[in-house]
Image (tube, rainbow, N blue to C red; front, top):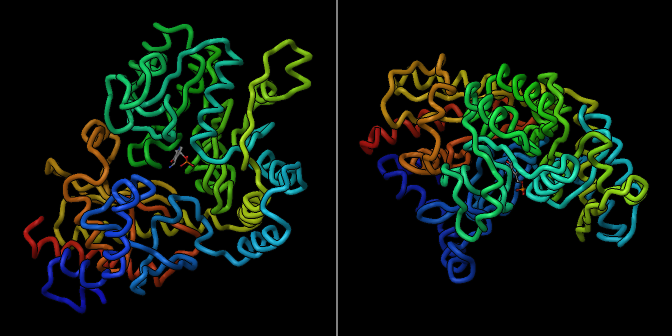
Length: 459
Ligand code: PMP
């Protein structure tokens, strides 16, 4: 069923009519899991979608509704769902066993690919998630520099470890969020993105900054873009101050280009955090960086140099199934134009959706970079033109607006009812498998959503 089948229904009625199976599962889940969910990003009123199968650029829910998927495994699936080569590699690895409690050949091959493809990665250490990768990157930077302070940018996301919680969507004054101790948040300095004077002042005032970490295309994959000139300034400031520059490429790594944002922009950080694509759609992550930094994880070097080695176990680090998926994915990205195809789709879908906005005379904008898209819903009614929208000017306005607030959930519901799944930004990531059919469905769904929201008096 879809909105077309229920032409006069509200989006909410249409959603409920087409998703009874999700409603039933959610009712049961709410008795078992907080809010019935396993990831905050899935919180959705009246209940989230329950998906049972996915292939390439699409997925099906438990009621057999089909959706063009821009959730993309939270950005992990640049090759779409179930890419046959990746799936075959995973099956083969599974047949050999999921965990050997030992070193294995695949982790060597995987590390070789990462170090060949990511310019900053002379050495790599695998983790089980992006959160673990950013945690380790900070620890390495502190050990190496002997300093404690960390600079982060407001709005930038680096996982949910204790250093990373304030200043993402709240606590912009740096105070700790629920459950985080004061001592940790005191060591974090929150900076404003693209604020040249502000960041220069921070480096003048603090001579003990161990690391600066950021999402190199800007918060939430370019939703709040970072200017290239600012990125260059950060590189220079860090070099002058002996501060470790960390690019959090958990999303942009192997996506923006097959060597991540650092390869695309030519600015090379000291360390890089990775997850999502690097693990080929399986759970995993990695920290890469200069050898002398990763040496703090090396038994022999740390002993020889009299450094106290950083302890790093992790039951599922570089497990063979994840390694197999990672290798298969990275080889495809290395050897094909998959990144370019996803980026080209991104440019076209943003243009086509902006044409819809112009036709429908709605002052929103669809923007983004590379294979990302974001819908600016213009809550304060600024006089903007969709095709020339400059998100940088609106960063202060976007900051602190909790994801999924205002009319964003209604837009998301409209898109769902019309066969498209994006996150509650509303934002989406694009795979190399999105093609003409998905383009048409997406543009039509966007138009139908806008018309439904007009009918309901929402816009
Ligand atoms: N950094 C960035 C930029 C992310 O987008 C994410 C996850 N969305 C993380 C870190 C945390 O990764 P994980 O969910 O694997 O812990």
